[in-house]
Image 1 (tube, rainbow, N blue to C red):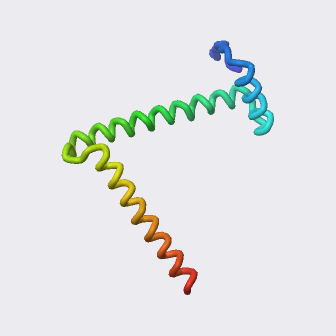
Image 2 (cartoon, rainbow, N blue to C red):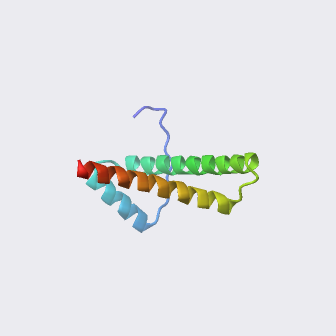
Image 3 (cartoon, helix red, strand yellow):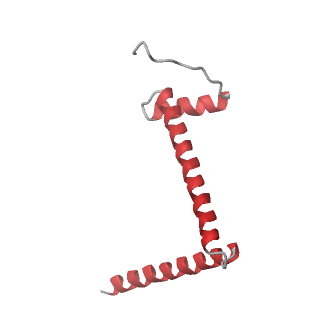
Amino acid sequence: MAATDTFRSIRVSLGTAAMAEELAARENRSMDEVFGEALHLYGQRLAREERLIAFSEESMRRNPEYSEEDIVRLCKEVRQEMYEERLSKKMEQTRA
């Protein structure tokens, strides 16, 4: 390791440590890699949630005529239509 590397100790519960050790062993990785990837994924999830909140707030600002209930209903309707289209295509493919 380079002389510029620095380390910091952290405390985790025994259960978390055991889970990390098991994952590291199962994937032939170091504990550092397991915790590093876990923090990376956690950061990505937080960033995604922040983007969704910002998008939601911007959408509500641009479309004040739609309530939250309207949005939920519209999403369900569109998903149902998409599902029915996929199902119809599958049925056509099985007939052919």
